[in-house]
Length: 524
Image (cartoon, rainbow, N blue to C red; front, side):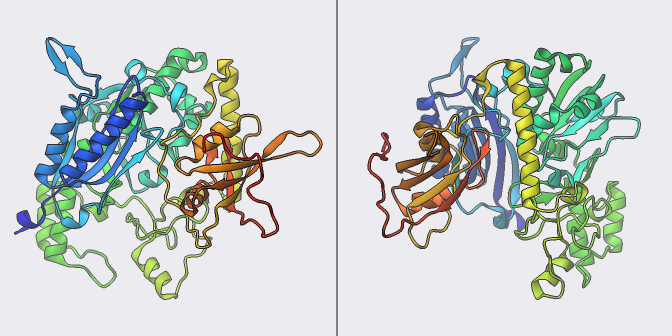
């Protein structure tokens, strides 16, 4: 019966393309993957950029495999001939499949996101280190496993800290040293890699990197290799090699179902949310069937499940809990609900008891309940964190300019067809907005219209200093529809041209003349 009911297949894959697609090639690829996805009845997320694809999809056994076959055969005008055979851009893509999942793990619909980068490192355009030229050496799980047992080795967890908080590799004491960069988001990685203390940790070592499926390691390893090749302060560290785990944790679990050197759970961005290695998961399922749960939500281990655990030689998941509840600090490794850290916004790790207590009002989860990273860094509020991030970004950008001696390495502008934004509510149907904290030197009509796309801007009133007549970073804009206004408001707090732009609705007063004459944008 289970084989008939659990009939969902999960697909994880990514593929960078070099050189990047031009506009026409990008549009054709986007249309192709979306059309074939609907044809095969797939659901999930497709991150589509000029630099390639990064997808998490669900569907039937045949539907997923049919879509993969279509993509392998996709030409797109860039196929090449090797040994007399036509080789397409996705001919060697590694598709990671998980079959026999329950229907509840199927995504509700298919959504293709048009993005600047497959992983948002802030390394788009001329900043992007070429993967073919600088990418790290790919190691299969067994090779990577062996490397983690070698001395003079460091292993960088390229994931966010809240992911590493519930599970990570745990090499033997005489083997590699694990390094958690303690990032809240991937844009922090280039800055972390540039720090003196980071470089000292890498001195004289062979460097291993890993992430969930492998995609985050591609640019990360290429960035480090590029720095070794081009920057003297990194070259002199004597790094003995840069390696990455082929297929990520997902593939490692398939080769080491009992866990290998892994401890805890693997945080994932699909409807499984997090999972342990397969053999550990099997023990947990057996405990639920044979042992049941006690009143506190803690699994009660039966004699049968103990025998199974001993026979398989694995530790049950509750023996390997890595995280702690942010409220009561008991061991916990399940991210529940939609609560996020009130200071930095990462998912909150809250146990079942504290979650229920907050729900029924007996113990509220106040603003003082923050993620372990904010507690360790003594970050008390959003403003303090934002100021810290902006200062670090400013220092990093300044170092980049001085190293390169050119303005060609400016932060990339949010390009047309960038991240699809979910519009904010706009019950009053306002179409006028106020924007501030924009880059006064680089922001102009073309850049603003481009970064606010797909919202359609019709008028811009640049606000200028009365004495000097110079633009000082603020403007009123008019957009075509209320939905466009909601899309623009969704960009409040977004980094644009190196500054965090602020946006709010600004309803025109009845006495105002709006839109003003001579403010219509040329592209409207």
